[in-house]
Amino acid sequence: MVMPEVKVIARWWDRVMALLFVVNLAWVTWQLGGFVPGPMVVALPLVFILAAMAALRWWLIAPSGAPVGWWYPVPFLGWVAVHMAGLAELPSRGWLHGWHLWSALAAYWVALHLVRRPQLWRAMWAAIGVVALGVVIAGVYQRLGDATWLPLGREQVRQFLGRSSGTFGNPNNAAAWLALVLPVAAATVWRGGDSLTRAERWFAGVVALACALGIILSFSRGVFLTLVIATGLATLARRKWSWLHRLGLMAGIFAGAIGLVWVGYQTVPEVRQRVDTMIKFKGERTRPLLWGIAAELWQERPLTGHGGGSFEMLMERHRPEGLWESARFAHNDYLNTLSDYGGVGVGLGLIGVVLVVRRRWQRQSRPYAGAGLGLLILSGALAFDFHLQSPAVLWLAAMLVGGWAGSTQARRFPSDKQSFGAVSGAVICLALVVLPLALAVPRYQAEELRWRARAALNQLDGVTDPAQIDGIAQQAGRQLGRAISRDPGNERAWMDYSYALSLQKFGNVDAEREQGRQAEFAARRALEGSELVAEHWLRLGMALQLQGDWAAAGPAFGRAVRLAPRQPVMWYYQGHHFSLRPPTHALAKAALAICLRLDPGNDAAKLLKAELERSP
Figure 1 (tube, one colour):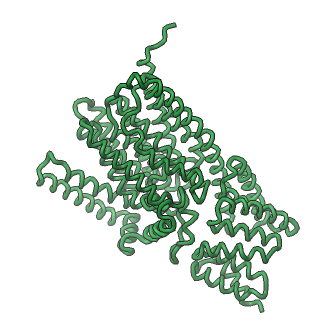
Figure 2 (cartoon, helix red, strand yellow):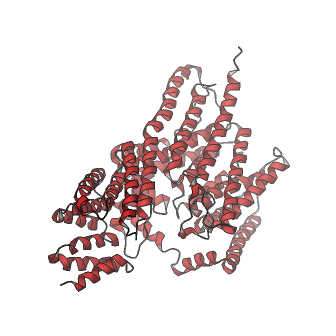
Figure 3 (tube, helix red, strand yellow):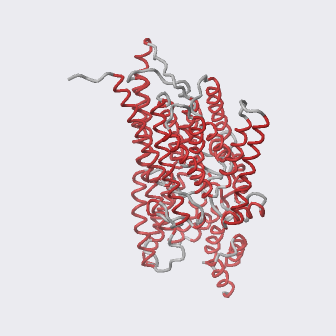
């Protein structure tokens, strides 16, 4: 049997790598951009396996050595690993967010390698163009057909109704993803050269127009604004054109954007509402408040930060009055990173950016137009939202960075270093395959179970039927038990487990004490993970109260109120606790008054306060 040549194996190896990367990106894009944990059980280890395939090519299969710049993101990601190892204040959040960020390195490596193959690179972008068309078609269907439709059998939340999000669920993230594709497609039409056929140019033009349509239908103000500004600046930077030509074209871009907004304001209610909101609040109402919270969290730990994914759980102690909404992220990825990883993390990230930009400008050949503009648009949009928290956006951005800074030339691996490179490459490849499967997959499986169970528990708001409450709580408890068995360190799963246990056998007075003991155990396990989360203390207080230990429950509710002083629900439970003993009715009324000041529409607080007013 004649074995194929090494070069033939390497060529097919690269093709398989490119195909799998595009399929994985398309899969994540369809699965709400990877924003829910379930799809990442498969997608995250696959992207690391693809990085291992790239490393095998560098060091073992027709070895040429790692390309220049392969290590640029490593210093920042090393700091992320330090947080994952124990520095993060919320350990389970830190692990999940850390794996999310490390996956960007895997996508970056794949791009650094495949950019050496111009035809393969072009084929990958053609496939991504097909994916972009699918996202836009879904967005058009949401606009003209069913506004509530989302993949995975889910329904769009009320907040985003009227805005097209395609397959992402979040219209802002959909717009950011399309904004990365749009400049590459437009540049292919504009500067494609003689190497492209007419059909390829037409396809690229269709993709560019579709991406523009998708961004418009998303009504994403941040992406639209940065797209216009970045395009104007790119036009101004075209040194081959005269200043008159550049200024005229830039003025035309701005005038066209203003005209588009004016037409939309006159004809589309969603555009009118978003423009009126910007005028009323002189820009934004909620985002500046969230930015202020992120800045205050950073000031608590300015060098190290609190750890990845901590914003949602720690924002409560800095919540200002008037902010009713909760948020997973700060709606500004720069401030979010500062809060999560501190000044050290931001500094290391900036070093990586500087190295990438320096490498780009050192290159003599710059064949891939449009990538820089796409990254510039995304960089501006990150000041208004959390686009990099979506794996689909993060991976496409990492791919663009790799293509933008990578080289089309493959350098040869020195013969005296091949043995060392082979051993190092084998170790790196093994780590890229084994560590995500062993450490990341169980955590994502647990988070998916926890996420579904908590969503079911949240639907109990307003439900009074004991049988229905018990049924949903029992099912959620089983899911949370499985989540904890997969990831015993997930403090949030323990917190939700305590919640589910406290609701089981609802209305059965005889079973309350036993359920309370189990719920207390789960709440204390959550507190072992972090004592900084108000809801952990709330669950402990409720568990102790179920056991009839009113005195011990008081400090737990008090700690919850101190950690979340402007969260109405904490004051409600504090008031409810005080209402159980006549001597503390005055304290109960005071706590409920604060709850109603923060949330005048809290019906449960109104009823309890009225009942206390009638009692002696």
